[in-house]
Image (cartoon, rainbow, N blue to C red):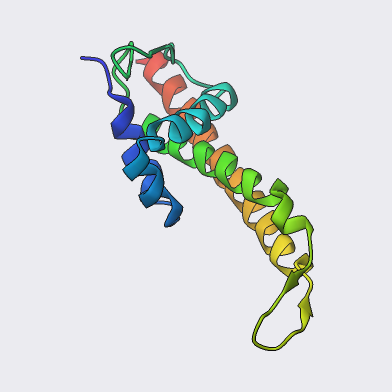
Length: 141
């Protein structure tokens, strides 16, 4: 049985809290946004032992993915999501607070996002190493 994209999306949505997803869901654009992150994740999942082809009409993979593969894809989707936040133009501008009329630098916020992305890249790499190791052990048996 093929794996529905929604199963990978569920893994991703447990990792990310973004209230803009609520409005995207109401307008019907959420699936499109999630699919863009998924495409990025598929490209970055270089150690996949299965064909990660997506049947876009059926909204599912052409193969059955296990939870470990779904977790790797969700982690890679999270990296795509955070990368988008880092490069968003609002993060590159100064923010003016209405209450205190002070200009706050976004450098600290950007620094934290960059550090988060670095940690997520490491986590994804570790997951893919474990996945490759597991696949190698399966080949031995």
